[in-house]
Length: 198
Image 1 (cartoon, rainbow, N blue to C red):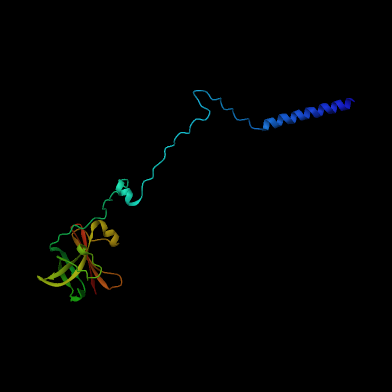
Image 2 (spheres, rainbow, N blue to C red):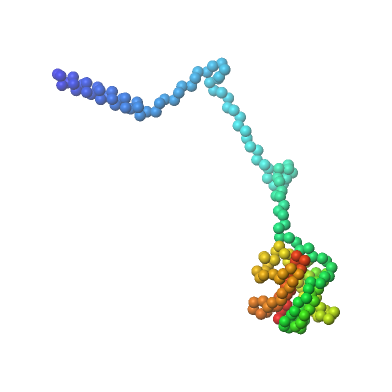
């Protein structure tokens, strides 16, 4: 009889311990909502959320003035400031016979003069004001003429990797391959490049 009582007590205490541990593992119940009062209704009306208006696209945006044009970027490359009139560029020495405008030009020392004449569109690779005719003058007479490419000082590093001549100076050199003789004149903040076929 005593064994039955002890066994019953043991079973009862185990059941209580299991129930207590189950209660500890469960999350606490959510707090109860306060009862509705006159000042606070039970279900308050939903507040309006601010809605973003999308800007219209295309021409409608421009018509409403919502589209802003990009800010213009400064011209860092520079534009050559070249006179439209003829001017002397300097004196160069041509060491060997070459061709200027398809005609022979003998070796010798020449004064190079920029003309006011722009290269015509039929000259290969020309771009208006940046392509002008130069004359090679010897003894007061024009011995030959060729198209010169005008490059502003700020862009010369993009066009030529060689060291440029000093300001108001020039250099004449044979290009790699020996097909062209380059006359390079640095005057007034611009570079004048003339390529004469050998």
